[in-house]
Length: 270
Image (cartoon, rainbow, N blue to C red):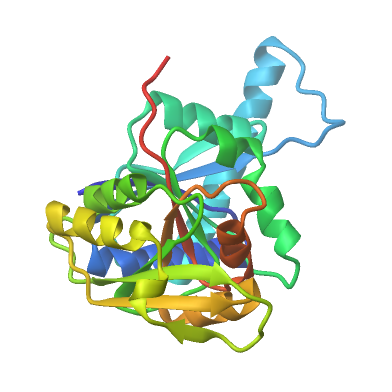
């Protein structure tokens, strides 16, 4: 049973993330744990002693009310692991601290897709995404497909991607497609023979077989990142190791309106 730390707030991105994790829990055995961070106003003075404790209590109650309203609105059916964790402070810092002190298989949050791929690159460069000790699922959309796509290309670590998928795949009813991507400047996506792919494709296929994970289809595609991103929209999510900064794989992940599972092996605690 995979343990998922799910960040929620009272906004559309969190609403989609909550419904998506609810759906995903019917495909993969998941236990979501909710976290919400109340960010104080920069000019707010909390004081000390009793004044501060009273202020913190009010902030916590406000956070609880926020999550309660969201859960009542969405009426999801998945079983959560314990009561929501309400923190006060900087969002990235508080989430990172929770990920460091408690064992989770991955972190998940909503992030609405935009026409600016730079927004996704900035997310990849954030403290939360660069310092998180586990994989991250960036939920952009509510896709109800039963197939997961694994994106391959220069800079992708297939061992990490397969290992992290294997952690959450227990009794899953989903299928896996391998998608090997190369660039050309045509807006019309082309499908190539698998012989046009590098050895990375065969290596990943063998890793899936060794892990006992299904491989339904293999696609070798070439085109612009935008064209490749559009092709990926029909998958439940796209899995890949954390891509090198500004790489073509990162650009494809930025361009797709689909959710992405950025795989990172669990780092040892310091």
